[in-house]
Picture 1 (tube, helix red, strand yellow):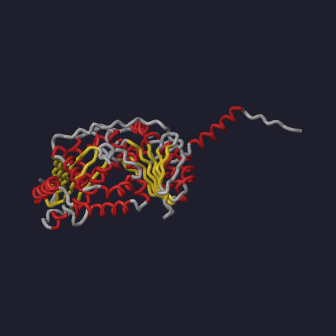
Picture 2 (cartoon, rainbow, N blue to C red):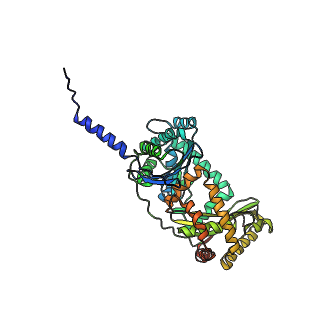
Picture 3 (cartoon, rainbow, N blue to C red):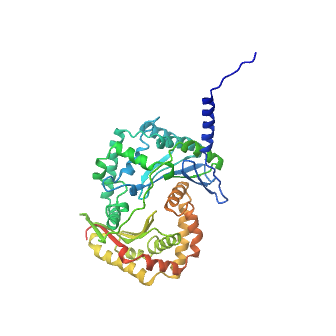
Amino acid sequence: MNKSVLISPIFILTVILFIVGCGGQNPVITVGPDGYGKATMPNGITIVVNRDETTSLTAARILIGGGVLAETAANNGITNLMTKMLLKGNAAMTASEITEQLDFLGASVSVDCFRDYSAISFTSLTENFDQVLDIISRCLISPTFPEDELEKLKMEVEGAIKAADDNQSAASSKLFWKTAYGDQGYGLPTIGTDESIANLTVDDIKAQYQKLVGGKNIIFSVATDLPAENISGIIGKRLGGIKSDAEPIAAPALTLQNEKSGFISYDRNQSFVYMGYVMNHLEPKELIAVLLLNEIMGNNVGSRLWYLRQEEKLAYTIYTQYAADKYGSLFRAAIGTDTSKVKLALASLEREWDKLIKDGITAEELTDAKINMKNNLIFYIDRKSNRANYMAFYEYAGYGYKCILDMIEMADAVTLDDVNSFVMSKLTSDRKYTSIVGKQ
């Protein structure tokens, strides 16, 4: 006798929605001949991929837009706390269980906050990548933000603030940003201050989570030897449950301060100085000009500023730095010197900046800088972890996830006039700032 099996229409609908929903969350990732690809998930997460079979490692970064730009002076440090608290407990695991399991899987995980964004970055054996991402995605989807973990984390951050303030180069760098931008936007320290984090509560952390953690505000980058279809399946399964909505991060005013010099007194035999220029967001060709100037001025032994150490004996360390953010940029020189030589060091830095602006660079310097720049970029992206990090950052900053490859390709087309015109138009006195930590 035939038996009829009655199936509830609701059950059928549930199964259909489950199948459609799961399938619909998998991004369609197409990797080009250069090994790179990009896709967008239904919940808004931007996926950028580099496929590299040279090692059986997978490196990834989950970038959450906001950073200190999503803060005020009153709650400065909340984004750093919120991002670190994501790994302090989820609906299925405690903080210690998360740490133990990630350690068991051999995953290297870091959580950091920057000026434009915060990020969870991790590297593991490719065979463990799915399990590692499963744990981290659970933390993004169902964080518990335990009160006791927040108090412990606050103490850790207070220790990090003290250590940074005790380090003269770190303290001078923080002072440089504050001198240029004040107590707002990029002028705020990325991990906050003792005063600003002291009264932050779990409710504050939860509100920041709701504000920032949504697919439309997340970039997921990965460098892996997995085939594209495998990447698609894993990412869809693990990240598809993240909510879509997040508050848009408003472009900051970034008002430059009138006072051009900042000073903090340290009773030590050494002082640390930063002197340089803050600028607006750079166009791709301008960014290449900054990288080339970095090679010429202070990134190598034999660069222009090396003379201050080798011949004038003014420095125990000297170099240049650049930063290219979503809304701003800088190019500055750093010098660590004996306190008795601070005035001479300042005068020498002024002289070298003035010489650059007045005379520009030479054709020979440009040729050498192009070689050094390209070699340094190629060396930098040799590691999958660096590749994953830069893909996410440059995509968020508006340069595109293949920015470093583009800069290597575009470098030869940059002319002497391009670089010298950049110097004249961007390195202007109204954008020049100095920070000194030590003795004047």
